[in-house]
Amino acid sequence: MSYRDAEVFAAETAVDKYRSGLEGEIGAALAVVGLSAERALKEAAIRDDMIRVAHRVGASFRQLAEVSGLGRKTVTAIVEVEPNPN
Image (cartoon, rainbow, N blue to C red; front, side, top):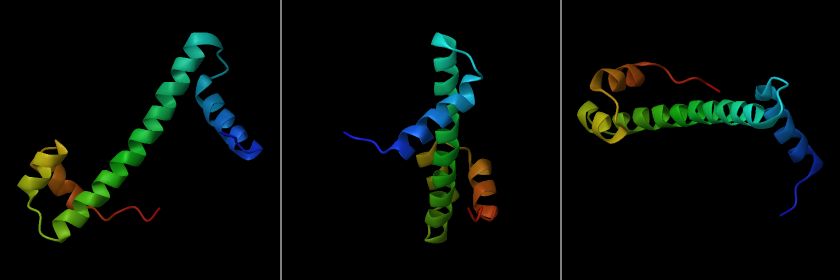
């Protein structure tokens, strides 16, 4: 597998953002935690969008809560919020 310089630079920048200048195991662990948190936010946004879509086409709050592992009140709040236009 080969990577372009821009891809390598982007990856290094993302890791350095969370390392806080720390080397070794602690810096690596901080980088993994930070990158995982970014990914979790993206995944939650996708999940929320799909909850809205499923509700719009007929899924009940109960069904959505059951498959998402969230409570009905949380699902209701997600459905009632306008999605972020990002």
